[in-house]
Length: 333
Image (cartoon, rainbow, N blue to C red; front, side, top):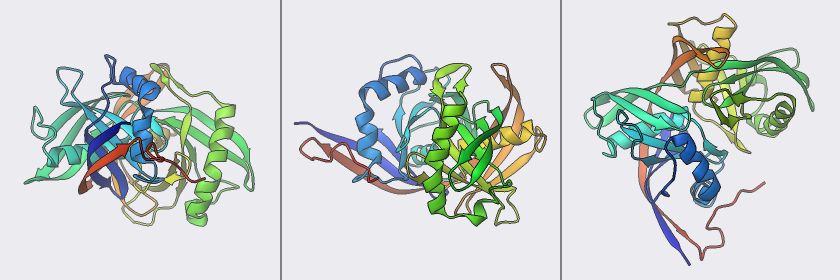
């Protein structure tokens, strides 16, 4: 029998949980975080399930594991884990991880106010503001984001025909804007989002192929982004992002915000230099910005940034004991 201990900092970013594993994470092989992600998925995914699923986690649980930097100019490396899998990139997870790591002394930046992170999706740059021991805000300069598919049509039970744009912001997002058979997020319930999103995701993955031109391990529509009218006058748009099997992001979703900015730039609604305030299902906000043009393979893309805040909620030592019949977690379907 084996007993494993994991040392964690629990936090949330604008309402969505982030469990940062600072000790006990598995050793991974690979020269890039993308390769290390594949090693984790092949040999160590039980760690994700044990820490994210019940009884130690819940349907919305999301987190990260800290590693030493892989590149000489980087400050640390991060692997993203959540109920939906081991993600190439996670925006709210990055903001929460950076906040927790700085406030709890897990990273000492080479340049105060700045960090460079190695993540599976690439290398990302962070800027942050701090008052005393506490981080006020974190701005994530995300990977290049682009519109992958326009106006993909499916027939969804109870709705009829729905039309989606699919955009990449670190993960692939199916974006549902108000249209003939969908009046907006304000007219459906959270239960509807959870009920229909898995069906929509499966139908879209049957219809279109999404593969990142520079990393084929990043593929498939994984998130569904429902849009609607904002409730705050300072917001440009509102969304509810579905992920995993039953989760709705309580934050505005960092990679989802990146994907939506890429969609809006491609459609001519945003331009380089424009700000984009994105509102979550609970009313929290991310401050997005279109920083520059870019390319991803043959696609026109943007370099987005997203700013948000996070709060540490506690320090947690989690024990996973093989004597426990639920050592590796479970979900209720």
